[in-house]
Amino acid sequence: MSIMWFYDDLNEMQDFNNLREAVKRLEKEYLDLRIQLRDTEVELRSDPDSEYLLAKVKYLKKRLKDIEKMGPRLAADYPLEMALFSAPHG
Image 1 (spheres, one colour):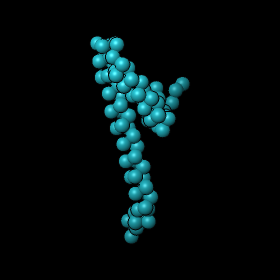
Image 2 (cartoon, rainbow, N blue to C red):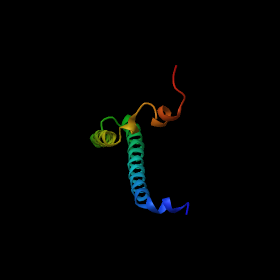
Image 3 (tube, rainbow, N blue to C red):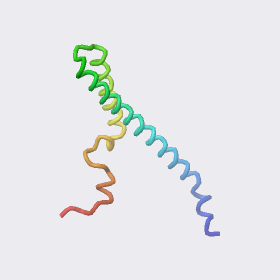
Image 4 (cartoon, rainbow, N blue to C red):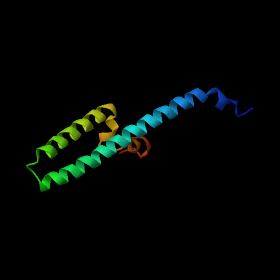
């Protein structure tokens, strides 16, 4: 009898799992783009006249800004967890 609450909230748990998977995909894409941008900028330093690399850096920065608009916490200076679970200041 004490486990019946789980069956009542099963649809809510599925919604939560779907949201968590969407956030994980967004974070993975953001990380992949940051890695590509880092590597492309390193290549650009060795070949600063490459139009292809300049265009790629511009594209990757635009994609990162779009993702940061969808998930602003990805670009925050401090992680959200720090504000939620750390000791209060003062």
